[in-house]
Image 1 (cartoon, rainbow, N blue to C red):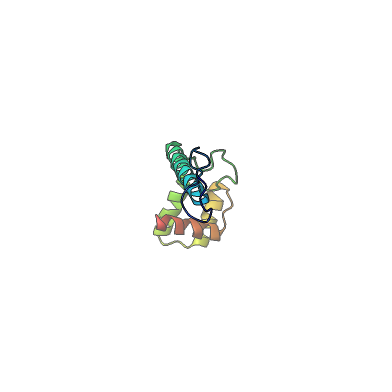
Image 2: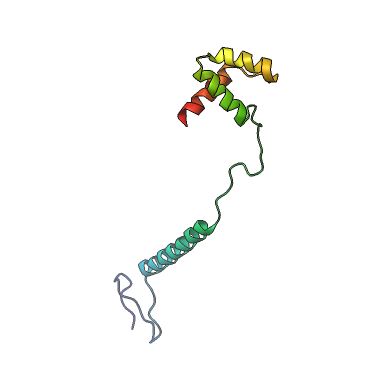
Length: 111
């Protein structure tokens, strides 16, 4: 029995299975996509987190952890960034600008 295509009821053609309407097909696709999204989210959650800079690319740090602690101690003694930079140039031979020292002091104070 053929029905009017403008109605929302499903159509049957000569006793075969009902033909799905456009909205029913869209609903099925949406449901399938939701299942796929849930599966992908689960796979993503199971994946171990990526290590930051795992290839060790980029510029190497100029200042080691020990140097940072010494900068902190010198700053706590009341020395300015420029004075700390001069001390490091004399002690280690590593050229550190006063702005680098200032930046390190701010990083240390944040943590």
